[in-house]
Length: 292
Image (tube, rainbow, N blue to C red; front, side, top):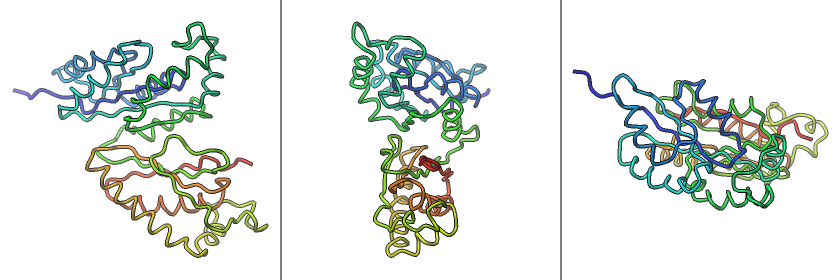
């Protein structure tokens, strides 16, 4: 007699209204996930049970849970706590975006915010942020969709949840410029501004940290190699802990002033080193490369 099949994984997709849940749901469906939209949290248990029945097994289930459920959203923590007692791997993906970006998206589609009431769009957005702050804090992966188009967001989902996911940690190394703001969707941030800036060398200014001349300049500076060694060693310890805790996605960021030279060079070297670790899949993203 065949044993009862079980779903391999449950992914909760949640976050701010207007942050791209529909795009993410479509992308996951294309990757082979069984996607259920606007599911009351207390229905997660029956859904998992159904997915484990012979003949109706869903290998990967994604449930979109959001503010549209009203007070039912308050049941999410209780539902997840009861499910975490099983062997089913559970992750939560939280989609976020800056307030002005969310306002612009709502205005484009001419729809009110679910919590707007008689107030403004911004009133509704701020109320939602307060309401789901605890969910954001406990999420396994946060994606800031500000400035991302549909295709870019889809690519981010494919990076985080590839079809051959296995048991690897999917690590994103992100370079960025502090003058454009801190990235909101990373686990750790390091600062490369203690190193001399190649921008002040006319022959290096038009180049980027991906060019050999810039990389050689950066790592010829006092403290650069020591910083990379110390930071990489600390991140290796962190990744070991993530593997023990079954955390499957991670993002580490390194910033400089404009996100063009120092941070890019260090991110490339860091990615090359961490990609050699067993069970780690690394992608590199240069957030601000190409900006003036």
